[in-house]
Image (cartoon, rainbow, N blue to C red):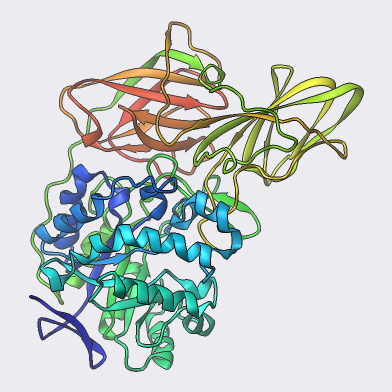
Length: 570
C-alpha cells in the first residue's frame, strides 16, 4: 500500500519528498457529467491534488434522510482516474459560501448557538452524521489503495470559537472512524485564529490571499516544525446580489502563487474551479448588513464556471509546470447556438401553494414548518374599524410581498422598509422568501421566515396561518396554456435541442425568481445583478424538447428567456 506522511517540515509520498499542488473543486457545485472534464483541466494546469468540502445539509436535509451519499466516493474515483490525489474537508461546518455553512437547518434550529461546540446534543448529531460519512472517506484513503492523503478537522474554527474539547472530540471521532492519513486544521494567519483553531499534534495550515511571506512567517511562529501550507490561497472571490462583480488581476494572482511556491510553501488554490451553487444552496453574509450570495460560484477562478481556461489558467500553468509535469488540457465544452424561448404556459403561484396550517398565536418560522428552502404565505387579520397604522414585520428573514385584501401594496426586506400603513378591518398576506442562510460568523444558524411577530402600530396581530412551499425541488404544477399570468407565477416554455451542449440562460425584463430545466434547479436570478446569466450544464439537456420553468415573484415584461453561449457575471 502507498503512504503519505509528514516529516522534517515537509511531506513524503511513498518515501519521496512531495510538494502539495492542490486545487479546490466541489463535487456538489459541478454536474457529475462534467467531473471528468473539470478534473482533467485541473491536472492539465499542473496540479497533483484536488480538494473538496462535504456539505452535511445537502446529504441529510432532514434528520435521518440521507441522500446522494455515493457522490463523494464517485468523485474521488474520478479524481484518481485523472492522476489526482485528494484532500477531503468533511466539516461538519464548511462555510464555502454555502447555505448555513453546510450545517442542516434542522440541526441549528435544535441547538442554536450551541452548534460548533462540545454541547452533548450537537455532538450526538455530529457523531451520527460522521458514522454515515467518514467510512466512505476512509475506504478511499491512500493507505487503502485510494487517493485521499489528508482530512481536515472542522473548518476555520479559530475564526469562530475556542472550544478545544470540541476539536479534540472531532480528532478522536475521525481516528475511531478509520482515518489513518494525516489530519489538519486551517485558519487565518492571525494569532487568535491559530491559537483558537489548532489542535496539538495535528498539522496546522493557513488561509490567505496575499503577502505569502508574512503568512508563512506567522504560521512558523506558532508551528515551526510544520510544513508551510496555504490550504486556501484566495486568488479570486465571490459576489453578492446588489453588489459589484469581483475580479482579480491575473498577473497579480500569479505573482502571489509564484511567491508562495518560491518560499517553499505547498498550496491549495481556492478555487481552482468554482462551479455553481445550483438550486437554493447559495449562502449569505452579514457584517452589519445582510448580503445574500449570487448563484454563480465562478469565483474568478482559473477555470471558469463553464469549464473554460482563463488568463489565470495559463499563467498558473506556466508556474506550476516548474514543479510538476502536466498533460495538455482537454477540448473546451461545446455550446448551444443562441435562441429565444417563449413561455407558453403559466399558473399563479398561489394556486400551487398547499393548504394552510392551523392558525397559531405567533407566525411560525420556516424551521417550525419543516421547510428548508422556499416560500411561506402568512395570513393574519387586522381588526377594525381602525385608522391606518404601520404594519411592521419584526424579524423578517428575508423578503416579503405584502397583500391587503388581495392587492399587493408593498415589498419589505430585512435591511430596507419593514412596515407599511394598513387600515382595518383587513386581511393581510405576506409572501416571505428566504435568500440564503448566513454561512460565516456569529449569525450562523439564523432562522428564516418571520422570526419575530407582526405588529399593527405597537399591537401584535395574533392568529397567523401559514402555507409553506418547498423550492428544494420543482413542485408539481398544472400549467395553463395561453395568456401568461401576472407575477407571482410559474411559467413554462420548451427549448428544442438537436444535440445537448452547455448554455447560459438570461431573462431580460424579469425581476426576481428561480429557474428549473427538466426539473434541475439552475438557481436564483435577480435584476439587482451583478450576475445576469444562469449557467445551464449540457448534461441536464436531452435531444428534442426540454422544459424550462421560471418562478417569477415580482414582475415580468416579455415572457421569454434567451439562450446564450457566454456568461454575464457583471
